[in-house]
Length: 444
Ligand SMILES: Cc1cc2nc3c(=O)[nH]c(=O)nc-3n(C[C@H](O)[C@H](O)[C@H](O)COP(=O)(O)OP(=O)(O)OC[C@H]3O[C@@H](n4cnc5c(N)ncnc54)[C@H](O)[C@@H]3O)c2cc1C
Image (cartoon, rainbow, N blue to C red):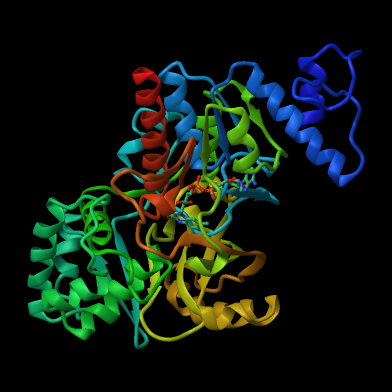
């Protein structure tokens, strides 16, 4: 709700006056300065309603923090600049298609969400625990033998790595068993792989395209603990998509919160709030755009006689090209496309991102069409949409992963950049901040 409407509801609509410390206004402010003063007054008024915590941002971090505060009996207000909750988790609907803004997946391994989400209501559709590796005109299969034993064992014979590399995967598996995403080893993923003795072949054919696509960073700079934890997650669990799109996840969490305490269209700063609330939880991006990895996605559709023939797995480009990866989201989650249609997504390489829509689509399709030809024979792909997401994942390794946040006075700054770059990292940060506030409240 807009602050104007909010204040109008909170106070007697006939009261008006000058903006002193206990003021209330009901006149709609016109100038920028008036609006800023007005916002200050509105926030002050909200704080006076005895809410103890102001949360900046209704992304996963802010929403999860709010749920844990609610459970601890601590009142809060969430201020969100946009007209929707979810932050970076965003889904758009177009002509009956469900388009996530950037290919994004939920992992069953995200334990932070176990007490927050009703998984059944999300009607999850699952990826295979496997990937196709496009390699010098061939399509190699990498398949997790634990979750797909028959196919996985035969895929072990494919030439995506040397025998030694394949044996070394066992060592990574053992390392991964004790991995914690909140631990920082100080060693990048790439360095870890090299230290372990992997050949350039498997690094280029498997680790760089597959994990680089998840990190949005093909240099594999994230900390090896984060990588090992992901490796463990992918070994034992599958990735999935909710029927209504990824945004159903934050929407479901937000629905458990008092709606009157979620203030959309309300851009705030922590300095103002820190004067009025006992605590401020700030989940805005911790750094500028240059500290984030971006991504770009194209969506295409085609009619197909047998939409179920498409594989529910990721296709990754192991060499140079216009494409980093492709997927058929409607094979993973049939609700993403109308009956009789297939939805295909292509994640563009940095080289393709500077191209206009027509050229980028043309070049990307030319690269991907042979990958899918087996399933879609003469399918005519039609362009649906393109999304550019410049600030997708923080590029740095965690700044304070053990705590999940940084503190300055009564302001806690959190988010995935303060834990690890994922939905689970954001949820971890949100929970940790709520626990910190709850603990401090008990001490008082
Ligand atoms: C394209 C893409 C793909 C991804 N893929 C995956 C994936 O496959 N798996 C995975 O686990 N994670 C993935 N992620 C990462 C995951 O989405 C993020 O880690 C997580 O959503 C971060 O949540 P957050 O709340 O910390 O930040 P955000 O979602 O950025 O939330 C911050 C909120 O603060 C609001 N805000 C900013 N300034 C103000 C202000 N002044 N006043 C009020 N509000 C403000 C913003 O509008 C936003 O809603 C992906 C992200 C993107 C973008």
